[in-house]
Amino acid sequence: MTSDELKALVRTVPDFPQPGIQFRDITTLIGHGPGLAAAVDELAARANAVGAQAIAGMEARGFIFGAAVAVRLGIGFVPVRKPGKLPVKTIGVDYALEYGSDRLEMDPDGVSPGHRVVIVDDLIATGGTAMASAQLLRMAGAQVDHALFVIDLPDLGGAANLRASGVAVQAIMEFEGG
Ligand code: AMP
Image 1 (cartoon, rainbow, N blue to C red):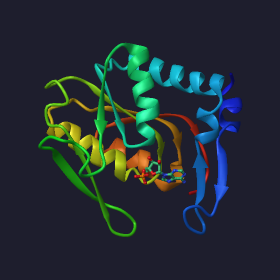
Image 2 (image 1 turned 90 degrees about the vertical axis):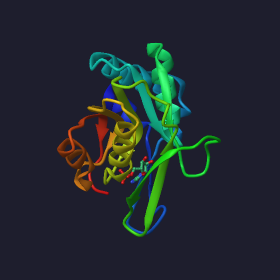
Image 3 (image 1 turned 45 degrees about the horizontal axis):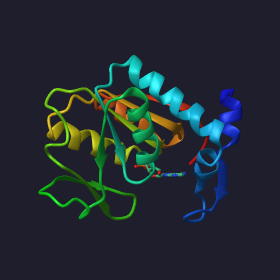
């Protein structure tokens, strides 16, 4: 499957969740067997090439791609969770959204100290989610220097912000605008 064919499987929904946002919906990509396999294969090849020892994915869409990549490589998966979901004492990072703030949490024993953990998510926009995840994983002792996305929205600057914090960023495809 070519990268153009893969890109064509992403559905664009205008004005969701609010006016002016072009929502890049991966539901149609993951519902297509060869498309899902091609995306996971591509992410897994890139994670392997940078020496991933574990994969971290953010709730909820990062779980879909991240867990599949981890299985493909035979390495562990670290869930980065929304607040209040884990049954153990957690570590957390609060981060700013355009309006308000949000929080991500994880099990502090979820990574082996010094292991290279590669972040996988469906999409990077402003980079707030990925930056908070990198911070959290580093607090837990992981080495975090690579993040992989299916989609980058480069006009929103998230990938540039993440790179500035020492994380190399790769994406399978880009869309213009926000
Ligand atoms: P951000 O923290 O701004 O990089 O946003 C990252 C998360 O928000 C991603 O995990 C996406 O699931 C979601 N997201 C943000 N903008 C969009 C968009 N235009 N289309 C689809 N999902 C989006």
